[in-house]
Length: 400
Image 1 (cartoon, rainbow, N blue to C red):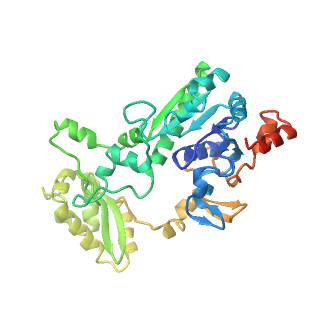
Image 2: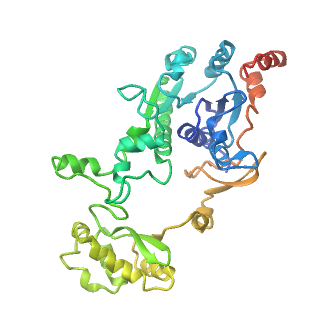
Image 3: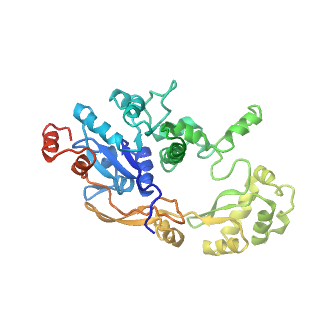
């Protein structure tokens, strides 16, 4: 299976760091031709991010597979001409500079729309393009802090903590991908392009689940707070200490699963006990529920025995995997979520794949990330129509 959903779509990519490059990596894996515009001599920020081994950044390799890299000094008038020539032949433009930067360079949506009326442009920023916070500088951690997510993350008696990964960046990327797909469909129906404004903060606020309705529906009496390893209002639903450095998760939120869990633990007396016979009652008596489950788990010499019993009784549960265990997991490997790429600098490297799976098309992409400016001449010749002499003049004048 070699067909791609977005074959024939071209993306002009001004993004760097994580939120933008992860978006365009997904677009590339879906089949779009992604032309990444980088700063001459330096390249995108993520080229310098750890881990760096043999002179190559794992961060960069992970986010830029299969893209084309061209270098342009965006402040040079000739480079601006080239950008607009490329825009005429593109479908999507992506950027994640601070709001106003693209406009200051002369690359506003309105400017692109003049040369390509049906262009789709997507901007990702911390707070969005307009509003009192729009000009604040920010990273993922700022979005986490201001979204409500960080307030809800961690133990109730400890300070708020960031997510273990930059979830604000990648969550914004996923929302941006959906928005671009919708814009492409709208363009297909109407012939009209449009501008997409994605705020990392907005995207995180949208996924804090019941925190907002809990507050608003209670008239402010219910003030959502960090609940640590366990769900704040329903139990059991959390992380349990299985002993000897092992942790598992399990959830038993309806009475049928709770009955199966109690049966698995040989604790039938807990099934209909009014202290435990609803998710809310169990949350109110969380300490007793956790003690019962962890005592049972720690009675096994091997946590896998307990997990097997839970599986037989159809209790949703799983071990908490470390990265070494994750990379050996048969389900993950069967789904081709770990791919091997032959990078020209590092050599063979294993990287995570894009997680979408389709019946008729593929997203598997093992083409390595480009060297800085690797495709500059190719793109300028084939899409802009420049000659070798013109390209050499650009190089001499440090435009590329």
